[in-house]
Length: 365
Image (cartoon, rainbow, N blue to C red):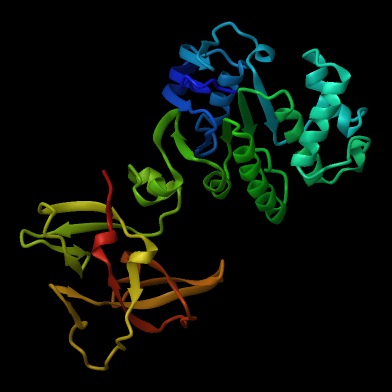
């Protein structure tokens, strides 16, 4: 672990990795503070696992530097880097019982038997496997095997725990359960961790900060909340699943239009076209009902009118209804999709009015 002088568990400074003409990692700088968990996410082939391998010493960078606990790692082999490693494939030793698996690294480090036994018991208790010391590996469930692998990685009290898709082979319910347990355990131990995963939900649940990498470059490093609420680019917004990416045109009078729809007044914005994220919570269904023969949607004041939409799809998920709708009377080849939540089910094809809370709209850079 880090000492009290403010050293960071991990510092990645300007790291580049080339495979011939292929640039796998491009000038990446990232750090992990003491007791912090940083998750690295990104598309397949973006460089996530390559970055982890460089930190672990399994891959040499073409340029840049890795420091662990303030110490440069150039030329330092993996087994001397004070790391705990956990992968999707738990790679437990099948000929050893659980206790021997967890204590293997301690025995290699020269811990005496009594000290090893105490540490193994402590870790198995922490991961919910108290009394499993004599259990054989083939007798374990998938979730139990991953808990043993986690205990083994944590046993030597590493300066940095590194996790590469640790729960990727498990079913969704078990993965969510172990994600919650891992977050609790890392907090209790004050353990610094670098977590590489393709599962955004897992990353957001575990990490203090999330680093999004694309084509070897860091797109954004931020807390899960800020990454969601303030994406730095359209790529970030699209990758993390923002459903409403709009192009708003602001007139000289400050009125903002999305296509033919007047969204509201943006008097603090300069005239021009802006790519924006509209959070689902910014879209509200109005109690006002569509009226036959109405020439235009009712006004909310300040130049803002309710938008008239037609429901295309409504599904139940995660305790609420998720609605997809399109502006009424739009050509089929020029649809503008609006996604939002509803407390009640809406029938496909029904017409409704919605308003947009313009203060919650996030402008992309």
